[in-house]
Image (cartoon, rainbow, N blue to C red; front, side, top):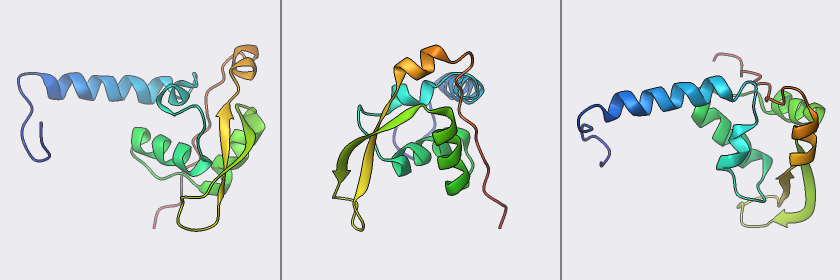
Length: 113
């Protein structure tokens, strides 16, 4: 389906249900990392979360929540194709997620403009 075209049959409902379930599950399970590559920038992770949730997240609070949860660790490698300052690459810590009872991610919303 191209942008602007209508979806066939009940595909719109199926997609809406899937997004709704993903939004609910992201609060108590780290499912967002299943959508990320093995190594990613924190900006890419935040943009993925914002796309799923449909709202903007406060960058500093988002990074603070990630640090507190311990779900990501730096790889030491840098992404240089960001167009500006090189960004550190991170990876998902499956061991930490398995050791945590409910390792969801906090979603600190950005203040309304």
